[in-house]
Length: 609
Image 1 (cartoon, helix red, strand yellow):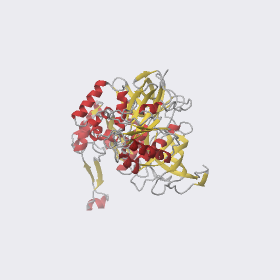
Image 2 (tube, helix red, strand yellow):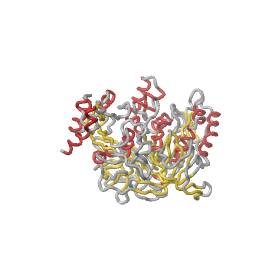
Image 3 (cartoon, helix red, strand yellow):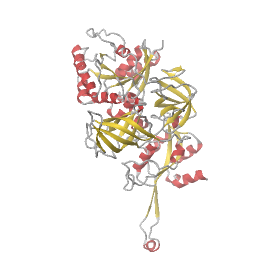
Image 4 (cartoon, one colour):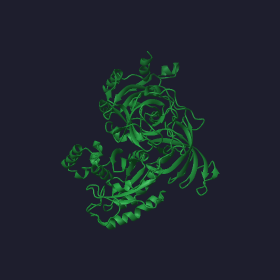
């Protein structure tokens, strides 16, 4: 009999011990190679950090090990007698909420991890962090919740029953406040470092008669899956494997994916063929609703794919959203929300800026009916129906058809300030052919942003269009295996902020852009110290001489050319050109000589010739 497939997201405040607990559970269930785990433990002892001897099996980035904190969601599989689990270890830092939400959107079960160590539970509760994590998991549609109380072996706790009882009594109130209506939430005391009560009854807590951590998951039973519907698979990660080619990881939300079928990626309309499907590292004949999979593809390049795309079948393809109608609940906002407000929305595995284009109605929370048409604003605690316009390419669906792709969290200033469900979607037509980076950036008018710095550029119906012209110089590969492009840019309107918005709008945000590429910030900073945006050529007219004033009225054109600064040159040295043209331009820019850099028009003319 096949085991049930269950995806789990571990969430908790930074430092609560969730990574250690998950890693130790995986070790106990035989999910790690013994030699690799032994090497990891030896390294932790050697560096004087024995508390991380298990957690480092999941936290593999150098930055994660230096900080002692998870920075990117990790995926680890393990099995019990009845279930096959795909577990997402999510970052606990508030600043990395976008990454947490992406992983949480794929989970059947949320494991809320809180620490019993003295002062740590109180800090997490009083700061609002526990409530926010519970709210985010509820917003992402996770219906099943289990609570693990970690660090029961801490010297300030010493497996105290009274400490456990104190936390057990307090936790359900946080879940109830955010909307969970669970009669009996399992609250399981564990010790992640020593493994107490992870997969077997604890010898140190004879007073506890409930489930172990693993049993608390097994006891949840069958997960509710949607009825048979067309394929929808949001992409969480993209890898470029030398032998297999592009491989994407995600969860099948609806439908079935199998080798040999043609699939379409939205946004963008890229077409690919599925070469193979793997579940928990094992090759499979297909994957169905709720299963986390890695999919090997042909017909596309890894550089063309990105997190947040949605895979669908060719018979009923997903497509880009032009606008959508949503019912929005405002939780906490310091002022009034009006038309033109442009926060970020976290929907399935992506986060994009999205404008509140028009407030259509205010909804009575008791009756669910419209109470006021076209309200001027919305405040905390109110429910409104809104026409929303994404300011970056994104694929969404109605909640009634595809719930995981039809609900979203509204993020602003690092907080979740509201949630929404999508009622209607106005979709763009699926393009007949895909646009590569070169094709889509050479000359394209990208959607404007309300934050564009220009007095001549608005988001109103009569506003003038903003226009950025772009030309790719070099295609490069980074130390993380990701593909990058060195691009020459000419602004026709606006200032440098317009560049950042427009690059995001075509799906290629700037490297180390903390605002518009938050989810990639840690990866980018591993090789680039700051936003990779440099003004290399500036032209202006000088004041006219007396003779020029009498004849033309204009002074001579002056040009300033500045090469890349040293820190950006050093960062780019670590990238590998992918072809000879790329290598030539790459070398010119690394030279640090202004004379090697050409005007924008000369770069474009070379191709025309």
